[in-house]
Image 1 (cartoon, rainbow, N blue to C red):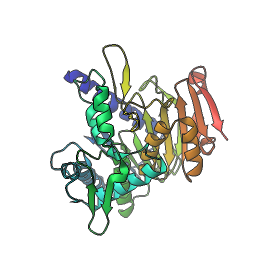
Image 2 (tube, rainbow, N blue to C red):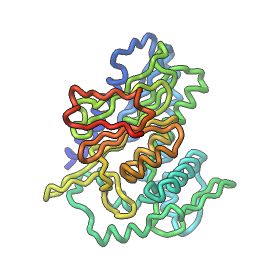
Image 3 (cartoon, one colour):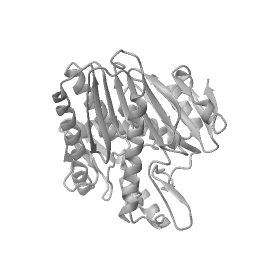
Image 4 (cartoon, rainbow, N blue to C red):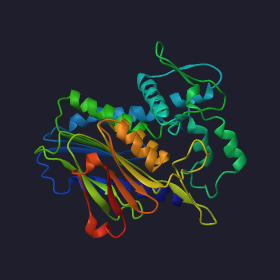
Length: 354
């Protein structure tokens, strides 16, 4: 069964590498320094344009490793593990980064009316979609039991001493839908403080760019084909500054003995993988943490509610792909997204939301 787990990891790595190749395509890089590693359970790379000093990448990668240790839900003794072990018992003092990311999560929980909820930890653990031995959906009774442990309003934050408290035993926090975005923003801010003007941070497909290429032209970031991941791009988004994050039902999943397919984006209200009618959402935003949170949130909300939320959120645009092969692009991307109509025009129907 290890082969299954390795296959999932390999697919993620291939997709991340393909995305980086798409960004670099046609780019006169000039002086660049780049470094990559397998962190956050994915392929991570940072590239600086107009620079030749590779030591500039040491602090950003150290920060990624530090945050990876503190924000993981699975490592024994991590801050999230301590919060889980003390649920219903006592508050736990955490680092500033952990406090801030949980605070940000609560904001998006409120915005989404609970569809985005980091207390889905027990549900994520129950499904264990990444585990190699998973073959079947959990029993309904187990899903109903853990659903009772999901409620972001039961997270108590105390900013005076940076403590986090889950009021009910059995609750836990999982930051998988926000951590990479938060980390990308922290890394980019550290690069700015070092005086870097042009940079690209790619955390397994969470892409954050600054200052355009070395010649200040825009990066071209490919939008994955959700039904043929790794085999081509539906189109390209041009972006000089900001973040692009995609959530799709193909990224992590398993198929049971009866051929039923279960993906990793879990609906906190049903306890099952989302059936919102969407198969992929790509979000463009100024910050990567916002793009990360929103890509999951919009997927769970579905097309109509998702479009409404984008319309109400300044500086955010999105591309929605539905299960019946409709592609809806918000109006802010009308000029910066180029759809590959020659290859995908007969598969997907493109509409610009007005």
